[in-house]
Length: 409
Ligand code: HEM
Image (cartoon, rainbow, N blue to C red; front, side, top):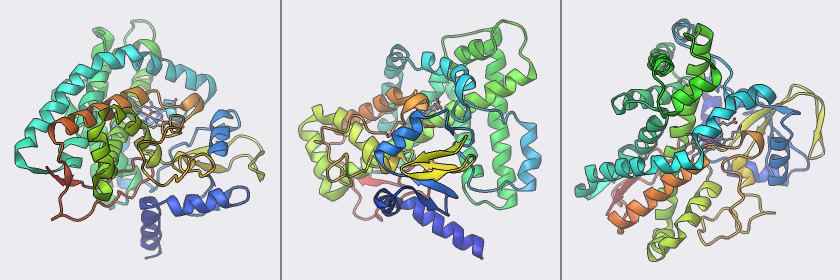
């Protein structure tokens, strides 16, 4: 019972963390939050400081699961690959090694080369429901496009993308949602299936490299052309799985949240955008700032440190809230308002900052941009479906998005 109460309280906090953030920004020093079992870093300048002091604030536990794994799930997972450190959880030299291929594979030129495919996929998705007059956009669009795009980036056969996307969502559920022991075991089976799928690509690209991220990662993390060792396969699969999940869940979330906010308040922002599409890039930045898809990641102190006047011993967790920094009233006027005419939002923290800053931010921005262009052109009369409930947020800090978005046009 107590556990359920805790879970319910945490879910509510995750659905609307903004009042807590506000309290933390006003507090002297840092605020300890028992639900997070961590000190909340809430002000823009403090968040930047932590993210830059990577030697003092380790990423080792940057993404701590919210739920313990059952025996049943722990029995299934060893049949898969990993767990191994990934770029998000590595520090210093190990981090630089894992990060280098991502910087290369997500360069401006590589992203630009992906965009015709992304546009074609987006157009086909919209063709699939345009004649219906109404749709639920999270399922019909937001959860689909980014998986197709990151699948292409990695080099997956389009036929494998639905299974890969499913495995990604199941991995998130396994680590962050309360499931029964059997439910966890079933989710673990799906994650193991995803890992075997990725391992197949890793081994194939070792023999026949292509122009894709999988080949770039194989070449960078396992130099040479000898047959991959089991350990190399573990590392490659863990990092490809991480890239896949980092690439699509976040972008799907932001597409849903952005459309939701544009259509809110009698569509004021949507109409503004329709009248002046040159505001689309500003809308993308404002969306990433105002209701950030990744609200917070963790860091752990590596030695005694003082932050915002609070003394922290070595080994304690801090929750670094990009989503709170982005609403810091010292930096933004009316920070809680979605306002696409805002000019000073370019340097928000929605994609992180410092050595771990998002290497995929350009790809995410481009997908959001093409989505807005597409919907403005194809469905200028887009509006919330009055016959359906108002959107409700998913209870999560890592892929903030509406559960569903019912619209008509
Ligand atoms: C709206 C979409 C996205 C948002 C809001 C987002 C946000 C972020 C944030 C806040 C971080 C920093 C984590 C930290 O400080 O530890 C990050 C890291 C990362 N992102 Fe993104 N991201 C998005 C899309 C993407 C895409 C499309 C990709 C790749 C295809 C990607 C790949 C990564 C990776 C690999 C990291 C880890 C980098 C490192 O630890 O060095 N992200 N992202």
